[in-house]
Image (cartoon, rainbow, N blue to C red; front, side):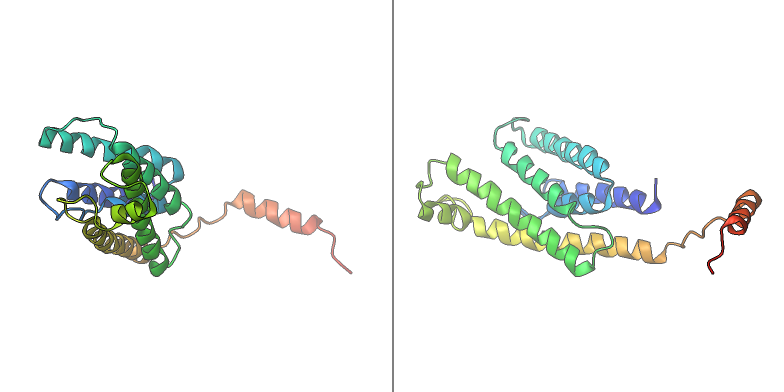
Length: 204
């Protein structure tokens, strides 16, 4: 396993701990940054096989902590959004600029906000099934509950913060890691290359 991938996994485990109840304000977590950066820095299969089960495990622990049902239909839009953020992250590469990766992480948070609130608009009878009702789902939310724009603000701020920290840490690891020198060619390889040069016809 590459050193950068190992560091990425360690950082992922640390960011996953930010889901601990009460540690962060509402909707202020590293989840979206965690998903996006995993897609960028992990091998393609590892990102899908590690990050979604890790999130599901933390969801189970949170449900047990709050005494809620472990499985409920409301988590389906969340995991659909997570899959979309993973796909989005895999359109970037670790060599992309800091600004480009930060923008990608923020785009993932926006995508999550639009998808989950649109699904809520269709599912919740409190919203009128009209364009005005959809705008309500994206801004004010259900009367008596905190407006959805506040959750979006916190989500955008936390995603920007943690994406920046994660990408900055990975850029630092890449910068300060010693470059691997190519191994010297063996005597047999040198002899074969020399013979190939001798047998190659010279251009007139």
